[in-house]
Image (cartoon, rainbow, N blue to C red; front, side, top):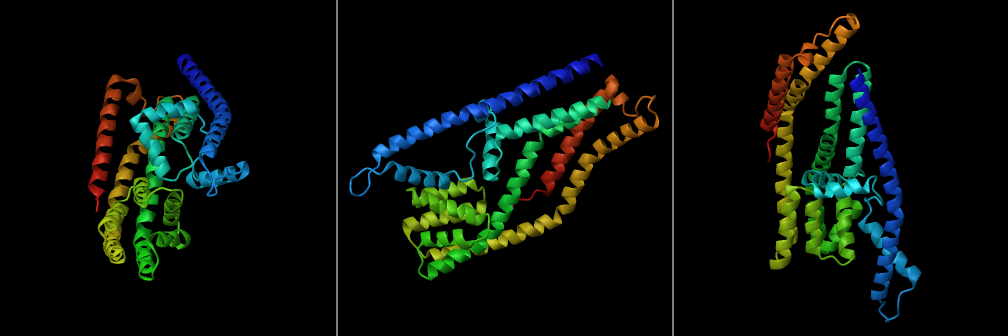
Amino acid sequence: MGLPLYFIGACLLAGLITLFMGLFQAQAEAPERAAAKLSRLRARREEKKDEAGAELSELEFVRQEESRARARHKDQRKTTFLPSLSSLISRNMILARLEEDLVQAKSSWRASELITASLFVGLIVFIIMSFRGLMFFGLLMGIGCLFFPWFYVKSVRARYYRKFDEQLAETLLLMANSLKAGFSFLQSMEMVAREAPSPISEEFQRVTQEISIGISVNEALNNLAARVNSMDLQLMVIAVIIQREVGSSLAEILETIAGVIRERVTIRGEIRVLTTQGRFTGFLLGALPIGLGLMLHLTSKFTMPNDPSFVEPLVTTLMGRDMLAVAMVFQVLGFISIFRIVSIKV
């Protein structure tokens, strides 16, 4: 037990050091960001004049900049828990992708915070299971906690995209009707931002805010397509941009796209219903060996505490470890194969 106790102590020490570093850097970063913001405000105030040529008052200019900052950074945090870790993550393509996924999923978490939290949860689970004499299962569960951020982000983002796609067809019909009634394209988007349900109203509100601060309509629409990774939305954005360049009846174009999107949403729903059993089977087959092994281990420990566990030979012997490694590889391959079969893109 000497080595596991030393290992657990080292993990606890590393966790405490990481926690204190995160708290210190988050507190130290706030004054620097405030000073940088004041410097940017002063620099922009010197460049900006009102229509009469006189300089704007400092209070009025600060109010204008604060309102625009709230519009641009409504969902962003002012500080991060670990700025150094955030800087390191931005250089890693895989972890930077996690940061982008969090932004697209409208999550208030940063990638550094999510990774740090998963490390702490995995460490706590490993320590608790180790003190219970289940060090191997604690290690497996701790590793599973490390992959939790990716599953969490993917599930949240998938729900957000699915809800957005379900609302897009009705939104396009609303815009088409408003265009027929004499509204401009910008006025129709403002009406969607006011009257449409969430999340599509939030996205269109951000588009109108970007246009109001000087961003072109095409660029604002491209930003919308980049934020929401939806093929239906990209089709709508491309059609609108082409129509603005070559001209045509935008209302008819939006009605046609809305009809196509409705059919795609209907087909996706039917496919989701038909593949539900396959997805459930994949999850069940993936969790069954782990649950069965844990149940056998706990049963043997509680019924015969002085005897070795039923699954102990899988960990203590060379042949058992080889068999366990091969089984895990085939288990992962089978899990991936099942989900590739039931994942049908429309």
